[in-house]
Image (tube, rainbow, N blue to C red; front, side, top):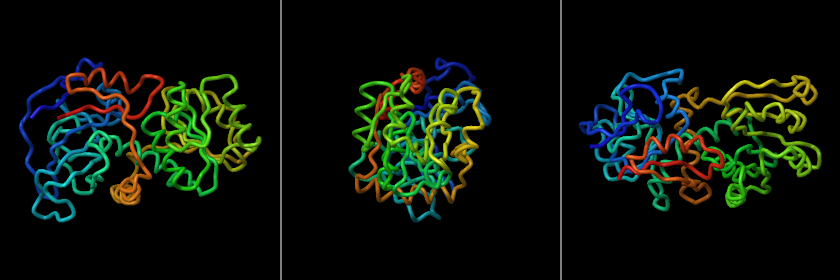
Length: 325
């Protein structure tokens, strides 16, 4: 089989397309013929060698994918051979992440892929939807009827957050950086779309809430927006930080005056049971079309380096995916 591997940490050019042996299912494991891999920022951080937890080299990056089950361990019964599935995470110690045509996963990492969703859409579920779900419900305790600002709504996590919040009965304001992005967030169910990066972005958000502010902010770029976010929340508002690329100075008095909370979100802090529960809760919503992943740019295996560059480009519109067919 073919796999995209990292032999030394560095820029996108270190991603190489190699032939590697097919894995075999061990106890408690599922072998999947993988047809698509989702590209997440964490994949690029690991490739660059800047992430806090680095695997031994050579390694195959990637966390999310979708395909067809080839075989299962004799002790497993929930997943069946021939079933269409998506997965989030692979077995530890084999060096085979989602950027490979065949992967091994633990059973709790594998979930049914509804017939209406493509493999590319399945590869767009794992990290984005679990991160958005954790930010909204585990960290911010978002309630139906509250107003949610998704600050950066056109990327993978942003799309997931909009869909989840709308399905939960929230009023959603989403920002995007382009006209195409604004159209995209409205198509996902956002009640209002606001262009971010403008001098009047915050004023528009406050106008839309009648000056009250929003109850919850899902923030994708805290190093640019956090101080302004503190001025946009309502009394008791919560700001969940999903993404950040640097330091920022804030005025704590803004948090004091509204008794607001800043909450960091890191999916890797979720245990196996919590991750399994999140995907079980979302499963019927994917099957019914309430949640529908949006695939943006697609790349071949030979274009993996370009895919890693694309995941950081401004004006994101959906999930970046690598075709492994």
